[in-house]
Picture 1 (cartoon, helix red, strand yellow):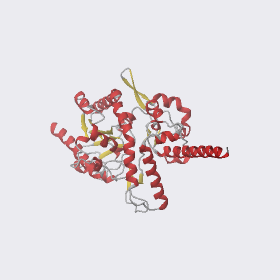
Picture 2: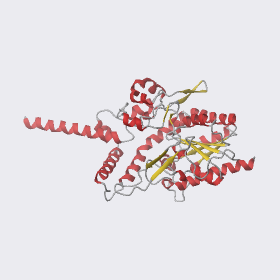
Picture 3: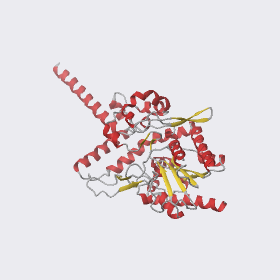
Picture 4: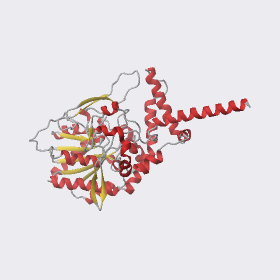
Length: 419
């Protein structure tokens, strides 16, 4: 009897250990949610310097920050610290050309982190290269993790103080998900500080739903706003709940082989950090990045479905952009750029946004549209070569930003000839 009891206890103990280990592993996997309302501590909140009660978050004026993009291995020299600096307008600085109130040509850009040009220095953004090409200042009002909705809100707030002849709206296909979001955690698990306003369509008209967070301190108790967050964030029912891990955690962890691979690469990176040197044989940073891209494929397919079911809201926001251009008398251009996760998927399956650009071009005579994927085609077909080699998640490299600048410059030059 005693051996049987001992055997049962060992099995129970192993099961408990497996559950604990599996839960800890699931916590680091970006495609799995383990908590609806993770605790936000004061230290994390204090670091959230870009909080904005109107937009959710926004780059602040006259700031300079150096950031290590992670482009090095433990023990190696840190060789990829990039500098982000903003001017008095909270536009990223444009080293190629200073602001000139008497300039004959003025240009501004709005959009997400691909517009802001994360992971490269101030003199490696496409705005810098475009300014050098046009010999005029180019404002950069990109915002990290912005959707078309927040970019449009920022345009309406900023443009009266900084009017320009040309406005480029530069976003990725993630916008289709971001415009349906109020709390980013419901679709980007762990992004707990990002609470935002959004637009909804009521009787064919855009109606703005203000952010449920008026003061930064309210982020410490988001659970008290659960009803509002769940009601207005589309992803709560359609993405968060289907990807919320429940017991048994071991089964959830082992459900996909990619979960095990990602957790193993993450553990190896942590071991390298503690040892202060890289382990021979495998580049775990690169392996983890590629594993994360594979984990992203279901999200990309989800976004593809959103373009099929919610294109009406995306189209309405573009129409608002065109109408605002007419009201303020500037030339509007809509630019779709690609995140790395879409580029690798779309190289095999085609664009997830379908014929969006063609529809917009046909519908609005005043709007110029650019599908940047059709301009950025590597000779060897390696789409990954368009992006920074390592780092936070695949933003465009300086060389690619220079190519983008040439495409945008051609648009302005063609308009000048037409006029």
